[in-house]
Image (cartoon, rainbow, N blue to C red; front, side, top):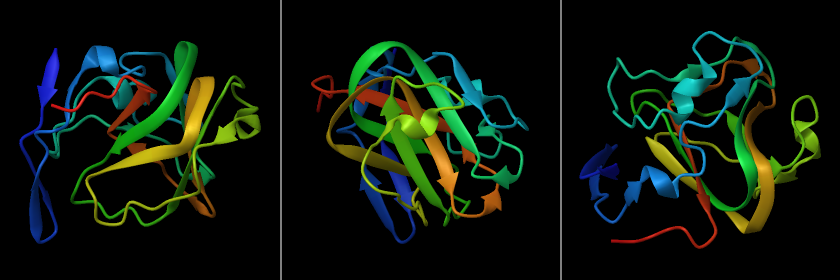
Length: 167
């Protein structure tokens, strides 16, 4: 199944996303097993393939806690280059997030290598995080760092090195 995104509204500007035409087969995280540090809404909603930016979107959501985390088990070692994270555009996410890739599972997620530095979403609907160099691993985790709160992710896509196709 191919997903074609036509337009995204980001603040005052509208951008065409037609060059991001992905099939689920290019997303190593699609429908793979997930887990998170606490559950308000199921962790699996973040890998169900849904990118709709509406209020009824089913998103993974942790309980409020210190450094909540979410992770996907890719079920095989993958060379990860890019991670795409989608959220509701009407929600401002100004807290710090960090992505890690590696072969350690919970509770040892912090032993995995960071994919770049920490980052914020601010007003964006989605964000592409590019690892400075490809990282090999079976698990990809996203952690809210610094402070207490929830972690809400509507969709997470993991792109393998060499699997990104521009159209």
